[in-house]
Image (cartoon, rainbow over all chains, first blue to last red; front, side):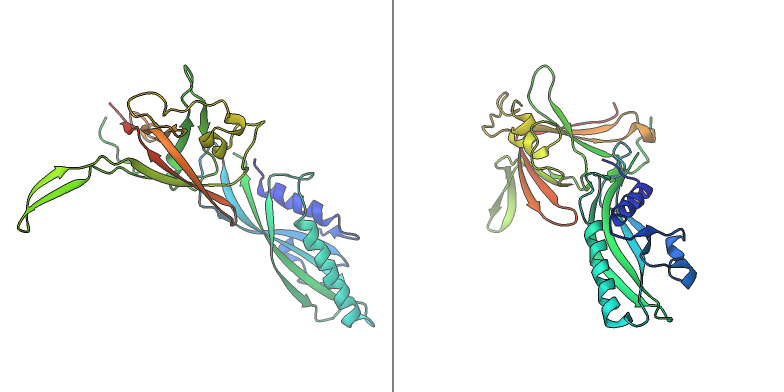
Length: 145
Length: 169
């Protein structure tokens, strides 16, 4: 029962890719959304924000059990004439799809993870062309020895 | 070699359960635990005798069993196909249904299903002449369970067969 941080990131990305129209960004997640060039409709990036130790022994034979903060960032394009409320609502419906995909079963992807939704930060770019989502999850996993 | 100069930490600890099978005991090494193993080893009750309020004699009273506890994370409740369930081990169910109680032989008869518990603290990795062990005999174990992130069990045990400590000789 072990899952590295990189395997966890890939597993979450695999789940997000099941949402219709989503493609993975080539911009590192830390820079996603900082400028218009980094975003596109339903582009996403998975950021492995932080990992914290769980209260356990950390024995070498078992590995380190950790609580990792996973952030899924994606952009949703708001059409000029329908930016609000039509596309604004559609964007949040898409956010719901992403959350459901990420907390779905990982049995066929990577079964060694337990993941929970924590919160969402929503923002609209100054140009009003895109709505940016930053969805935070908490994952419990053990890195391989 | 001189007395160890290295204080030990929870990373160095290991808990193993053993049943009473002979010649080879069934062994389960506890995994995914918090590392908060505790035990209390009481002395006999103290019967304090006073002469008009002044303590004159202290006699030994009843013997008391050793008690202890530790927490571990929930992975499964029970499993018949695979070894690993602590709940199965202490209750003689699932994959451990054929286990033998350690309480049925010896001077203290324990009618409940009992196990032996070996707590080992690494020593040789730090230059000690040996690892350090505490073997608790004839332990009756009780579980409590609480949901959380992650879900966790607390195992409380009462040891009726005493404890044996080993270390460098």
